[in-house]
Image (cartoon, rainbow, N blue to C red; front, side):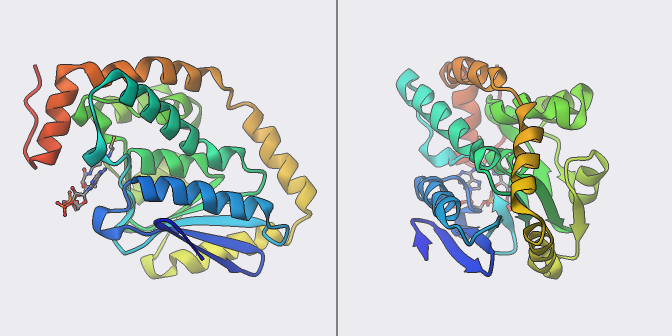
Length: 253
Ligand code: COA
């Protein structure tokens, strides 16, 4: 099945959701955003599906984050964009079935955030993780809301204030991900974990997810929705985004 730019397959009790715009590194285009929502909805309502795997098409990228080519610098665009993207990034936390991110390459920006919203991350040894928004004058609102608890305040601030890129092993050392596997075994290992989860009593699995996720809170995301749109009105952001589009280094004020 195809939902916009997202492929959807079922394999027994597992749904495999694949972002499918590899030429654009599976950045969160309109087609990937809408397709992801529809695919998750399909999995949510299919009683035969117990576990969901999310991955990216191609060898290079899981998801390179928000679609920078579509950015505009008006208050209404910024507010709508931030509201929509933060809601989409939180979807994997909210669905009542376990979600595994099988990270096949770049998990940058929104791709990083989408992966940490999943219950488990299995990464190819080729995977790279970063929240590089600072280079655009922006911030990773969802990651900022979640990273304190995941990796501690020091590392969280360091990653989001510098945009430092992590290898899969470095991400594992920080406790961001469950395991690193050889690239060609990524989906096999993700399906093995899915089968293991699917073999357990499902009511207990779903309660476990909701009990763990209760502590995520909600205030930080609401705050991010309120303040992040202002970043789009800053001259340094216009420069950062323009520089990315022109494939040059930004010159910040
Ligand atoms: N939005 C839109 N297009 C993107 C994109 C994004 N987030 N990330 C990559 N692309 C596009 C590039 O513009 C390029 O398109 P082109 O072939 O038409 O020129 C294509 O995907 C390949 O990317 P490229 O930068 O050439 O690949 P690379 O291997 O040299 O670098 C990255 C890969 C991920 C390091 C680099 O693309 C990058 O930094 N992307 C932006 C990540 C980011 O800042 N995300 C957060 C956004 S808020």
